[in-house]
Each structure stands twice: as C-alpha cells, then as structure tokens.
Image (cartoon, rainbow, N blue to C red):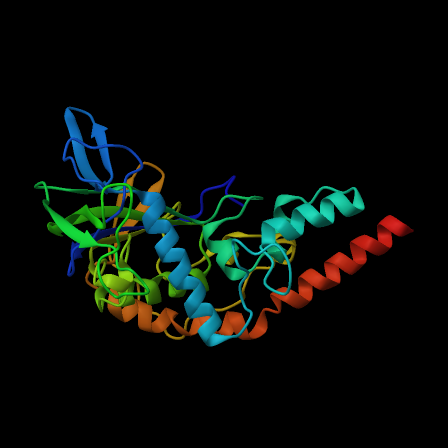
Length: 320
C-alpha cells in the first residue's frame, strides 16, 4: 500500500533530558570515557553527539506495544518472540511459508500482522512510521560520571582483576534534540496510537538509553510542529481507507473507523502535488477526536485468531 501516496503526517519532536541520558557507543571516543555517548560525523561537524533514530524508534515501538497490551491482552506480538501466542509476526510468516511452500504477498502480510507490526514494520514489510536521527543545536552539554561495581556478597566495591571496580560513563545533561517522525498512508487508529505515545513523552513517562534503573534516561518530548498532507485538496480528515477501493480495504483488512464530528481542516498550502495543513495548534483537540479509534480497532481486530485460521488454511491446502 506504500506504492501510492495518499496521506502523510510529519511531526517535529523536541527532546530534552530531564535526567542525564546515556546512549552508549560501541567505539572508543576522544572523550576518553569507558562508556562514551554515541557520536557521528555529519557534514562539516565531527564527533557530534546525537540520538540515533533506531534507538528512538525502538523506544516508541516498545511503548506503543505496552499501550496496546494495556487496552487488550495479547493484542501485539513480541519482536524477539520465536514461539507461543506472542510469536513475532515475521517469524510466523517465515514458518508458514517454509512449512507450506507458499509466498505471502504484501497485502496478506499487512492484513494478518499485529497492530505494532502494521505500524512499525516487520521483516516482511516496511512500517508506516519512520523516525530520523535526533540532533542538538546548539551542542548539548556532556559530563563524565564515575561508577563503582558492587560485590554482591560483601556489599562493598568489587575487586576485579581488570583494573578494579571503578568505571566511568559519559552522559548528556542538558540540550534539546530534534527528530522528525513521519506516518505515511496511516489509519486513524495508528494516528491515535502515536498520539498516546507522544503524550507520554510530554508527561515525562518514557526513558531512553542505558541506566534507566539507575536514574538515567528520563526525557520530555514536545511537539514543535505537526503537518498533515493529502495528495488532493480535502475539507475534512481522511485516512487510508478513504482512498482505497472496497477490494483493497478487504485485502488489507483496513479499519472502518470514522471520527465523530471532526472539525474542518485549516487552510492548506500547496507543495507540488500535496496539500499541506498545519495542525500544530489544533493537535490536542484533533487527537481527542481520533483517540477512540485505537480502542475500537483493538476490540474488533482478532489478530491472533486470524493468524491461526490462516495457518490452518495454509496447512490444509498444502496437505491437500
């Protein structure tokens, strides 16, 4: 369904450390710390501290999964699960293909996937959500902190053969990082899911990086800008199903949710083929209207039941 362009939401999120944060690099750093913060050489800037988009996407997906499981038990898979009721969607597809000598096409993969894989992707198709690396301007403040390994028997400092118990790590203590989040060809429930995650960012409920149980990683995320783009001039909110044929809606298993009494869209700006609407000021009100879409979708979408039925059907066709 990403072969065509229908609707897209772009969000600029400003991330500020509330507690020090540490995202460890796997390489040595000029800082000399044993656990240096991850850095990148970008353009004319060298050794720049940043937050990788992959780290942010992992945190956002993990929190989105928790939200889904809170609303409905076993509503999403486990990305690292390889068996049982919460087996990763990608592992299920691979197992079914290998066992039944078949190829699962994109629309079937999307139809059968759990809400998390539909939104963030799996090993079988790209997700609807992309998240850029987060950079700080001006450069953030960093400092090196000391740590001591504790001997579990004595309760004192551990005595290791490799230089003792002391170690140090580099943290970011102050600064503002900005990342761009894009939600393409979305369904309303995916908008709602992302909105719940971003609300928890704002309320300082999400931690990133290492040392989260040691007082590190708490951040605040504030939406600085939000735009909605359609590839035609629209007067009201629409999602993916509104641009699809009935057969496509069935094939992809799209939700039929429509918001109640949505306000008209603001005036748009034309950017090539796109009509772009600035939703920054109306974001909170629109999310309240869209938010019921997630609970409605989870209540009516039996992801696990559909997958099991498809697996039985595939096994029967193969044996037949």
